Image (cartoon, rainbow, N blue to C red):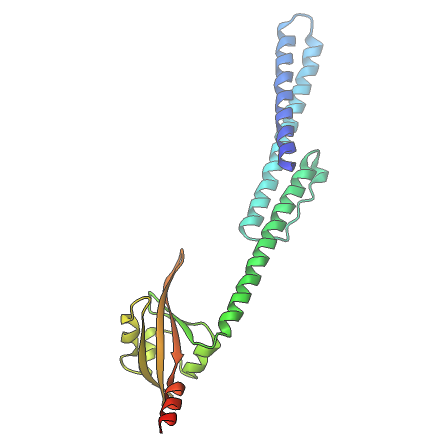
Length: 224
C-alpha cells in the first residue's frame, strides 16, 4: 500500500510538471502574457525542484533500506513522516519488511539451535569428512569416543589404526562396515555407516560410528 501511494505521488508530480511546462509554452507563444509567463516560469522551476528533492530523498532512504537488509541491520527505523506526504507510509513499509526479515531469521536460528541440540544428544558418534580432508565432530558421543585425542583432519585417525583413514575413504556412500581400532589402549569395534550431504557450498560425507564392542563383550560373557 505504501509503495502504491508513493508511486502515485511520483506520477502526479511528474504530470503536474509536464502540464506546467505545456502551459508555460502556451503563455510564451501567446502575445500579452509576459507577466503570466514569468510567474508560470517560477512555478515550473519550483515544481521541478520539488520533484528532484522528492526523488533524492527517496533514493537516499532506499539506499539506507537496502544497506540495512544487506547487512542484516534490523535496528534501522524509517520514521519518514516528517519528510513530506507519502514518506510516512513508505517508511512504515520499510519497517514492516525489516521486521518480517528479522522474524524469519530468528525463526531459522531457533530451528538451527533445536537441530543442533538434537544432534548433540544422539547416542551414536557422528563425524563429517570434507573434501579437503578436514573432520568435523558433531556431537558429544563422538567427542567421548575420541577422548582427549586431537582429531581435526583425516590423518589424525592413524593414531587409532594405521589403515583407519584409508578404510573410511574407501567406504562407499550408503554402505557400512566394521572397523577395529584402539583408543587410549582400549579396543573398539565400530559399525560405520556412510551417507553424503551436498549443499550449495560444500560436499561432505557423514559417518555414524556406533561402538558395538560392549555388545560383543556381553555376548562373549554370555557364551562363557
